[in-house]
Image (cartoon, rainbow over all chains, first blue to last red; front, side, top):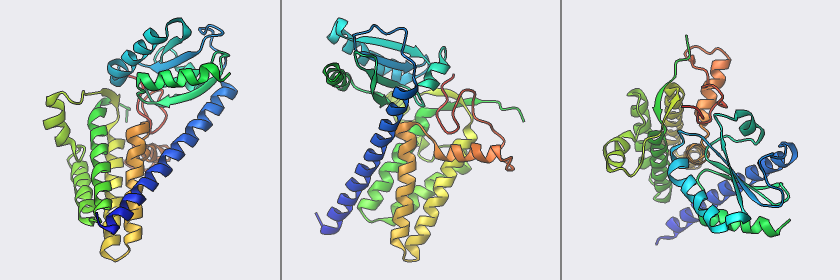
Length: 139
Length: 160
């Protein structure tokens, strides 16, 4: 591999890393805003971590990938997790309150009801389990 | 003019963005402004024909094979065409930068297009569409379409 190509490869990785950092910063700001402004969900069982899943009937990746992943997570964790599905057509105000801009969006809520993490787009089951585990103990 | 929405296949738009990103990154890695010029050409020709520049890959290959499923939403196609055309123009300016010897400016503009395409692909926010709707609010001539109902300007519509 030529030195020039290596340098360009390093630049590419650096720019992508900067983009990822920026994305994480935006996600952090969004979750801070939700923690400050969103009202507690009446559907939530206190003491149980939850995944709040925003979807719509015509969201193809929600139907084909995200919902099966959430079913898998629910089957794996059983009563230790609550999955709350919100249809944004039926509850547009709630989606607005939680700052949902694209579908699917999933929020990880800890056992005290505090939103701790947001995933924009499809998130695999393994990653969701990892996030739920992390915030189940970190309360 | 009434804001009549049309059926827009967002899978076609996303595949187009993925191709734009892939080819432009490849162009940067190989230090090949020619690839940037070809992407600009594809985007501008696509805009002229009212299609995504790399739409044929989706229509003729990925969709028939079932590798990508259509996601048809009620949306305005015009802002997406404007966004693609705007991206194509930015790449033409980048190519002019290369030709005139300003490679830093050329690659900076190329990375700008990559970043905006990635924002659209991964976060669902179309900056060019947002600019279109902003010009619509300012009553700029030709920018006649308003955002779909319950949709933040530039974001993907949530309603069918």
